[in-house]
Length: 63
Image (cartoon, rainbow, N blue to C red; front, side, top):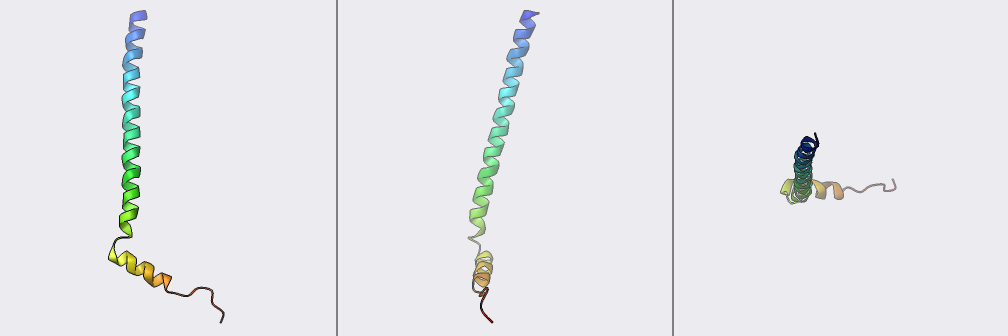
């Protein structure tokens, strides 16, 4: 039984390491894409126009 425990431990350890690597890689790529998507959003002309429009509206002035 000792040999089977050693083999099972070795194989399961490799599977867990592979799974962990895949999860960490996916999360790294996901957050990288999310970060660059937010930066690219404000480079679009229509987004800049909407931001300029709302920033030109006076807020909280006395009547």
